[in-house]
Image (cartoon, rainbow, N blue to C red):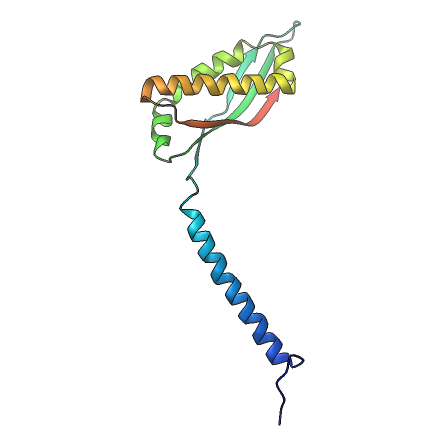
Length: 145
């Protein structure tokens, strides 16, 4: 007659499976409860990337190429961003074109430029839509020469 105790391989496997099953049920329940709380963020990317000149110090012409993603809370806001893409693109290009080489090439300067672009985009979209919809503006690519 076979004895069933914790040293038995079958009982250990059964206990392990039972533990995994129990943990997975609770984690699915927690995930489903948390999912209702989490916002459904979406991203709008400017295609093609933005390329413009900046104010350079010497004879060499400086340029910057940036990839930008706009983060919104509601995916339905992507339609408004797509509709106003030319306005927002022109404003960002104007901001980038008025920057000095020192500001474009420094990390703190880049953050100041990003913040200025974010504020301008939100101000413009608020004028057009009636509310600011952009949660964050991200530089996904930032190349300069």
